[in-house]
Image (cartoon, rainbow, N blue to C red; front, side, top):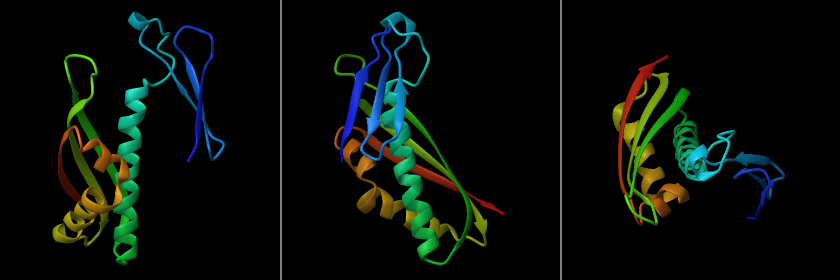
Length: 139
């Protein structure tokens, strides 16, 4: 996997080009010299982790032939007060929508992502306390 991140030369804006040839903009807060035009790098890390685990949960449920029609995960993170301001706690709240989904099946999909498949959350779990909960919505 590769990624190239380049400062745009304007404030604290950066442009990342991923190995799959996609562009992602990042920027800093105005108090840090940025113009607040794009997500912060740490927000991107959190968003990527949410995407990674949601991907896993949907894939696991689909492979199990469960009818899943939606999956949303909200992440709440706390960071250390001093440098480096790493994530110290991250809570994942899943809202999984589908037809006749059973709580034990959804819980198992989340556990498999947490313990085996989601590289991002497993990596962040080395420094942050990670918790999960979920709700099932019929639909």
